[in-house]
Image 1 (cartoon, helix red, strand yellow):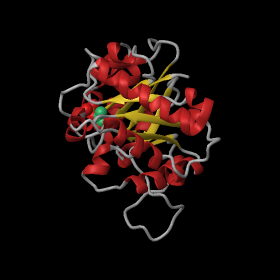
Image 2 (cartoon, helix red, strand yellow):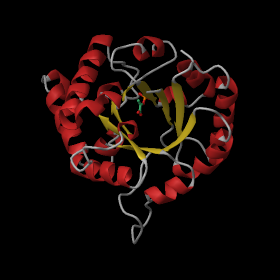
Image 3 (cartoon, helix red, strand yellow):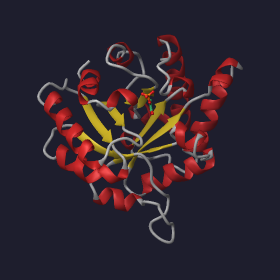
Image 4 (cartoon, rainbow, N blue to C red):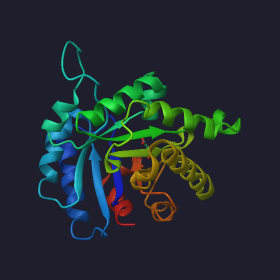
Amino acid sequence: MNKLFAANWKMHKTSSEARQTAADLVGLVSGRLKPGREVMILPPFTALTPVAESLRGAKNFLLGAQNFYPQKQGAFTGEISPAMLRDLGVTFALTGHSERRHVLGETSAQVGSKTAFGLSSGLGVILCVGEKIDERKAGRVEAVLEHQLREGVREVPRDVDPERLCIAYEPVWAIGTGEVAGPEEILEAHAFVRRMLVDIFGASASRMRILYGGSVKPDNAAEIIALDNVDGVLVGGASLKAEDFSRIVLA
Ligand code: PEP
């Protein structure tokens, strides 16, 4: 099971900026990546093709998408299907990112439909879960994670290929705030997510990757990635500069 270093560029970068950043990253990382690691870039839709071109031939680099619509095709103005993404070389996509839940109003049930549809369409899925600060203060971390996880995978076949379903634990209060969860908080949440996955999927859950996301930076990445049940990181702000993200990937 490779450790996954995923760069979520959100709504940043024109296609030419994205092409250059991806090329710079490949230049900084190629030949230096530790065995058992892979790198994924998730640019905006408009930059998928230029990033794919920059990644062409680069070993252990993957292309991801930040979102998709859970239908094959049809009258869904402004939306993008999994097949359209796969056609551009996308292998994984996010579902349930906190900005889609809390800024764009996606419900856990919608996240669940997307997760199942993405997987059945041949995409790998990174399902994001995480509590808000008031939920943590109220002692509801496990309740929130359990709800988001169970709803998120409700329609996913129990014999799904475990390598194609990743969970990203992203405490909402740590995303884009500079406030990183402490090692104890990460260990507890990841162990809980693993137990939930084993409860739902059985033994194959040991091969599902659990990523941490929330203000990962070059100077905290090594400590986080070494923790039990941390199988990778999902990085926003610190993935926008090739130099910063290369230091995370090489940590
Ligand atoms: C994210 O958006 O998934 C994220 C973790 O952002 P940041 O690294 O900026 O906190």
